[in-house]
Length: 89
Length: 269
Image: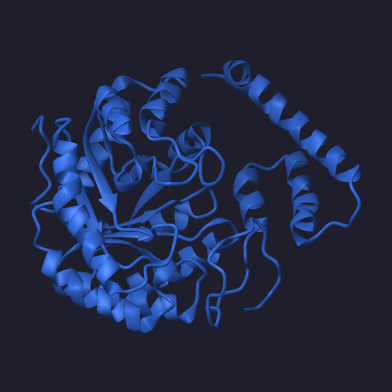
């Protein structure tokens, strides 16, 4: 496949997701309160979309990830929030 | 088409799901032991779960002409309690020689804690002592990168383990190379929200190669799609991949990995 065929295949889906992101940010602005660590990571990571370098998906995933290397002392809650909170444990 | 569903939690699915996947061409379904969505109150809960995986669920699948295989462990979400983990580890040998047990899994990490690592190490030791295949769960979302590194380092440090007999599941773009470069197999899980969509999964195959990769739905009690694997085949056709390549990725690859266990047989072969 070539670039035009990939564009034909995925442009409408990507366009829809981009509009959804824009609408999500507009929605946040309409409600009271401040960004938490998740939105701070989201806004910082969104800049990757404008990067000209391949590997954007991996860099976005890495930017949301816990960058530490040591195991935590004990697991508290079981779930994950989608962005690293910055807590050590 | 034909395909293998190498990771599905069928105890959480309906009979209609069995009908759907068999109709779509599924030849075998493989079910790792996992978290029930709540913590079991004792090791007896695991005992009954292992009975379900080795006795009841294969019979349920057989009603639809489907081969059913399983993997046993205490999952990482319940591994914080070391006493419970030891009790569950002690009952696994009673079930491990059952005809549909392929190995130890899905072991791994959830929040990357010290106790989770200890229990992972005990599972790896059990697999090494009994020459079992290993299926590894990597953590969710922000915990995946760190957890994948910890898991790979731990398993690589055990010289008894052949990396070709270990699959690191739920890889994404930032973790696929960590598993594959160390000689492990990599599993890509097809989820509608977290993990990978079909287009991203195909991107990973195009970027990292296909020799040691499988794809799975990991369908369970949460948001998941039992037909995710055949739907990805459709996406691969849209991307111009051949039927030969689709068959290799979605049928022959999982068959090759699980075929390292002599108990794994396919109905068509």
